[in-house]
Length: 333
Image (cartoon, rainbow, N blue to C red):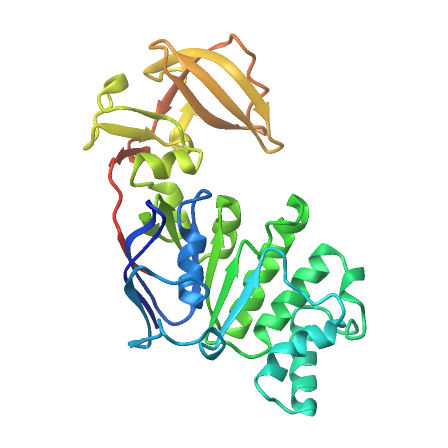
């Protein structure tokens, strides 16, 4: 459905996108995940037509849209600040895009009420948007994006201004709504937990390139590069051969999910930190080789690990992940 061909973009002498290639099939939610400044929002804005590319092309169903005006691309856009009109009611905000398309009053009222019901805001039609909570404003912005039935829905950090508890609930609802409508969505976030919760596929970006592409569980379970592992908070990275563990690359990740307390384990050390997470303790041990390792211990199976306590651990072979230093730059999602 959507093809991005070798797109580059620089601001002054600073390259932001380094010739990225991306293919997105019909349906599904694709998440551009990465730190601030990696190029994910710039790529989204180029697809939307809000930003120009220095070179390359963007195609929709095989046809270039680079010169096509924003309002004719039939895309839905949703941003972090929601961009609602404070002087309009909820219903008038949702109707705005339909009015711009020339839809008659009766039809746009019916469609607006339909999407408001979809996002759980039936009965809010006459409310002042300025009096709504952040979560309610987010739903209005989503309803406005969905009302014209766009071919592609693009969301740029849509939950970024919400508190953690509200974000955790709304990201699940947002995925359910997008799936119910059957839209293709391109979703931008820097939050890995948000990406894991909403995406069918993740494209992890770094410095204007793709580091790794895959299903959320695959990206977390088997990061391919040193950057990918560290960005996901997986910091047990050691040179191949450490603890007698060999890997294909120069460095390997000892995935924390594969590390367990084991009285007969080959890796010994001392507990340096134990943090209670509710269902588990996050434990950091300093090994006898002076290398820190972090892993989790189920709270229902173990008492809190005491700082200074001597322990032994083992790691399952399938959780020793070889890491590459280089990124790939083409992705098919």
